[in-house]
Image (cartoon, rainbow, N blue to C red; front, side, top):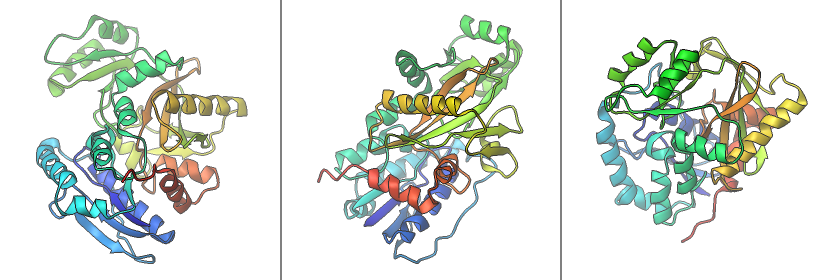
Length: 346
């Protein structure tokens, strides 16, 4: 097939997305596809291609810190223009498949998916409605809760508009809490907070942002990928830091990831069932893939933390690790994702 990979984009996960795209490209080339690598937010959006099978693709490392938000408005302007007209859109129209290696922001909140749907272009991953449902963590957890899945208590908070909500004060009085943006990925701006003064200090740094406060869960952490309707082997994330934050995710030595997780078979099946139920509850169909993150409380009971609509596909990402646990080489995982893509409506 003629495949265009979209990567980069305008979000805080721009570096991660570039790394994913440059990992996906050689996997597709290995399977005999023609590949063009595109960053729709870049000044020169075509990064490489059209590449024929056997071509080399330069890999890049993920930076130690996410990019600054200062340039996001400029990147958004470029990205919207590229996806709604001009040579990039024509390039997409000429492709048989758009492979989404975007993470965060417009790439994962349903924005790009809606544009591609409007242009009637085939693409990988969930549709715009499912992406939007999963992207807002507080609303997603409400959906999972209504579907009978275990989730932690959560309190919305927008610093700068009002004082710390009473419910959030009660949570931090009972023990450590985690404060994070309701929309975001790669654990950017996630904080562990142990006291009310610490919580109040976050108000200035996150004024105007929509945050979520929830209890810190001290137990083991797992993640489960779902491809179509199949759950992959469970991955355990063994942390060297209190939180699985951006630095831990993308820098060597920050975390140990074990697949398959060293847990009883019954517990592994329970986690896999939770992931499939979460996948379906948020509207992910048999043509999509996802990754559900789970953390256990102090009693060992697993809680759904979030569902990722376009999980990372870098060399160190969790979904490829889980696929390897199922016996799939990386190119096979990428081909399976491509095979799931909905047919073109053109």
